[in-house]
Amino acid sequence: MRVVVADDEPDVRFLLRLQLQLAGFEVVGEAASGEEVVGVCESTRPDGVVLDLLMPRGTGFEAIPRLRGLDPDLRIVAYTAVAGQFVRDEMARLDVALVLKTGDIRPLADALLSA
Image 1 (cartoon, rainbow, N blue to C red):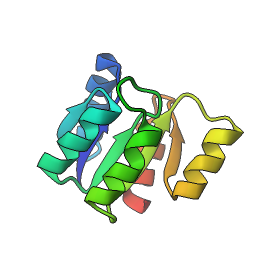
Image 2: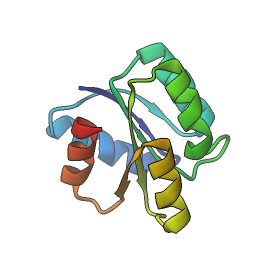
Image 3: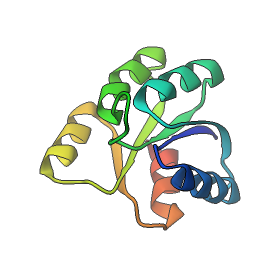
Image 4: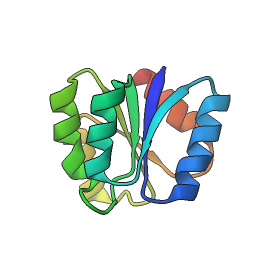
């Protein structure tokens, strides 16, 4: 599966890239903002995207409708440390899988495969 990783923290993107590659995913792009992830997905046409929700220059919340506009079948997984009731409700409304940042790649990999 070809994926894009979007997170404003370079260290998080680096670790996610390594972990996803070890889990058998092909990371075809990275983005540091909600605005940037749309352009990266437009140029790389991935199967899935790992999307941080709180980023500068366009949040993940703002990017989701634009990503769905590019590809309605794109597998989007919100990967965040913030998961209050509002976030859970909003991801359910948008039909986006939600995975908490824990350092364990398996829940994220499972969500990408089943999203």
